[in-house]
Length: 227
Image 1 (cartoon, rainbow, N blue to C red):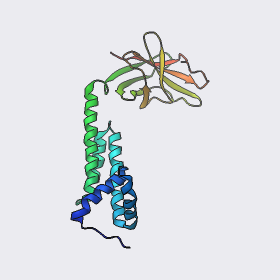
Image 2: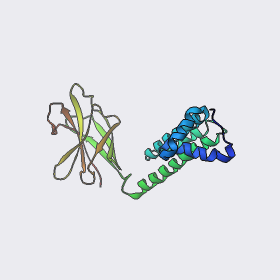
Image 3: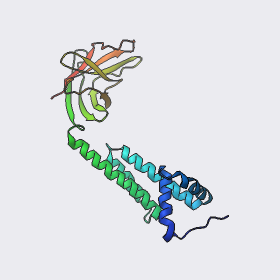
Image 4: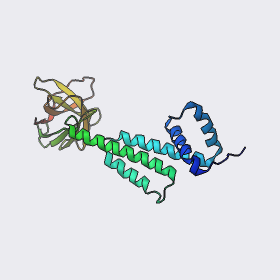
């Protein structure tokens, strides 16, 4: 039996709401089978469902990009202007994405203004006798995952073949915590699970993949993290 189309002004809103619920998995089980059968029989409904599924994906992606709301907003704006006259079903998708952007922006502002995340320190790194021509700088930024360390160093020759550089944070008691390894020092991102407020010295050493996880002591860069 061919699918009977209901007038849009009477049932279009309910139908669109059910498609949105099916797309995000919130549709009641007793309604799901009937709606899936209608979608399978109607290319138009299948197209609308696909739009809602794209909207759900976009909204969830926006919520996950809390630290980059501006980039997400640019993407949503581009989607919004794909067609100058969006259909009603597209308005639902755009509205959901825009709401996610607004939530992400609000969360981002709260994070950076709370003092518990977004806090950052800067450290200038000086050369040692093992690398007299080297120098560098590091920015340590607090995030929900830990401390992100963005290191940029020059004058360090590339190490490979089982040789590498390793960065460490050290506290006043001399306890060392490794924060990452790399082969050359330009634009390196490291991560620390300890606070630079307690581990106030940042060092970089030369290491060999020899099974010994302790520091070699061959320091090539040293810097303090100002409190």
